[in-house]
Image: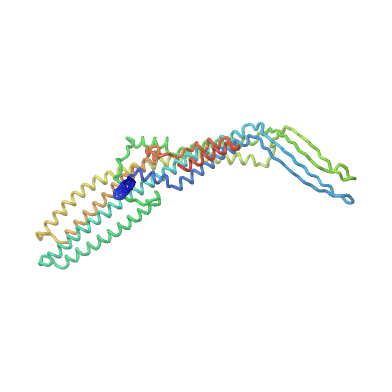
Length: 461
């Protein structure tokens, strides 16, 4: 029985090895790029750093406890050296600062939300790069196949020319023209193969693996009915616009925070300590003293040499800068939507026109070949007709690739080229996980262990 099971296992392994690998779809390419991207990992770390800014702002409202140990020695002329030591435990707490700390927390939260949108923008770029690599490889493969077919056709044309020359129907010049055209097409085939290798390397850089077999692209994604509708969607959902909006909100809070720096601060202090020092100057004996203290402190800056005023003016200037950046970003997004929409229209028109061109070029090529066999056309006429047909077919491949890519570029321009919107069916990074773990500035071991689990879970995603 064991031998039979072993033989069955070997047979199954052999069958699995003999089966062809599953063709990679566009979705597979995007998933591989999403999981492989170091740029996404880099910006996730940037987001986690922004999360910690919220924790730091929250911590400013909590007590600060510190210990202080001191040692001193003093010597008076004609006397012995007197040494003293002390150990203190002090605590301080900001009781009320007229909103400064809360403004700092609110500003840090807005920066977190802005950084989350920056991460979405990076995700869109990674997925768009994956789509570009996918369509470029497919186009390069089709161009290689087209050039290979052309080499085969021209090889037959060249042989036909040689046969006709042998029976005296054409001259050696016609054979030379066929040789030149065949050599040129072989050069084009070599260039197409080189471009395919370049695109394969680009695919490797994006996804972390070389393409083996790419499947047919999926149906084109559904787009809005009008350009204005696409622009409206982009203004609502594009991560760059949303990031600029959050940055503008943070800048507004920054102005209020700069103005609040002039407000007073009420803080409380408490401390206990023990000190050891000589009791008298004669016997040099040491004694210990225990002490404790509590207190309230209210302070306000009256004059700072213009520093607070300058900081307030700087915050207002930064707010104006961010507002202008928001307006400029919105305009750029609208322009990109318009450009990609136009690219789709152009590609569609090109495909329609090229289809007519191919049909006409095919008829012309067939006719010229027949006429050449009857002696009404020269070999050069046949070669020119074949070249025109080849160029039209190559243009159609490029136009079809451009149309497919333009659809995904438009999705990115509208802010919809994300794993969630594309329904790629993989776990995505949850930015709230880390934020929820650190927003209250955890310091206990239990919270630290929970944070470690969150980080390990993020690593698995």
